Length: 332
Image 1 (cartoon, one colour):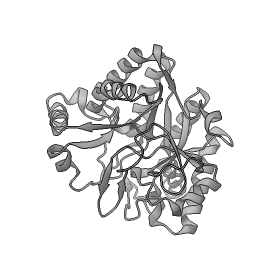
Image 2: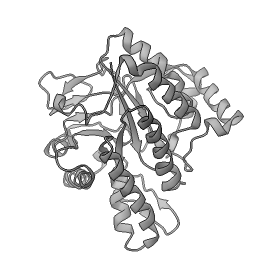
Image 3: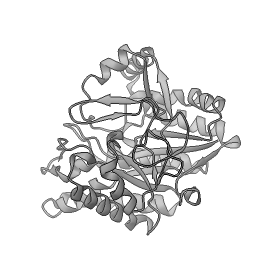
């Protein structure tokens, strides 16, 4: 099996976004040091809009230069040492700003579909071009939508295709959520680890222009999440996220997962990492050829890091830990 370890490289988007050091730089260093020890490469889906916004805000706020330089150095190092960088778009950075003390995240326009056709085209072109400064040309061809908001796809399809994007990794089987700000619905998507699509990532089209490599999905009981929240209070050193911010509001989501069985991503965020082995067994029984794990440096915990390392040790000999960068010839 090919196992992709993917991370959304970003700060928080709530009322307290957190610091670049605690949400991105420090946990990414910890992840990379662990992965390098076992000769495994990671894929960072880079929220490059944040870096672009930082570059425009540095004119008014020179204090941002230190964080900017540190992010650029880390991204350059990741690519040079064989790790992967791919495109992650959170377009709310078009409206957000720095107030001199912290980032003010304006999330009224949270997904690409909230923007005009011309704005969508500009965002995709500018964001991909900025990320290519770290990788060189023709290396950015995989995409993950911010907040998994890949739908509706038709209005963003051409902008992605014209910028060389051929692979999406936003879908996770049976996942669905809707709020005033954002929504996604992957019910009905193929129960496969790879398929082609054209206008709707939920519908397989054998000759489609795009390949979906979905984030792996797992079905969890409410008891799992009660245990997760309890452990965070009993042993915060091991189970609390390293990031020092708070997420954007997701009304009703906590109540939902504490009271109903839910479909969620296979993740290394915190106690979720304990499910890696169960997810792997399910993939193996279903004879799936790919397993995509998601994580967020900002949500990494010491427990999650240890669990991920043990998973790598357990599975490395008989499986291939890979990246989109390594699999380029398969898709391009």
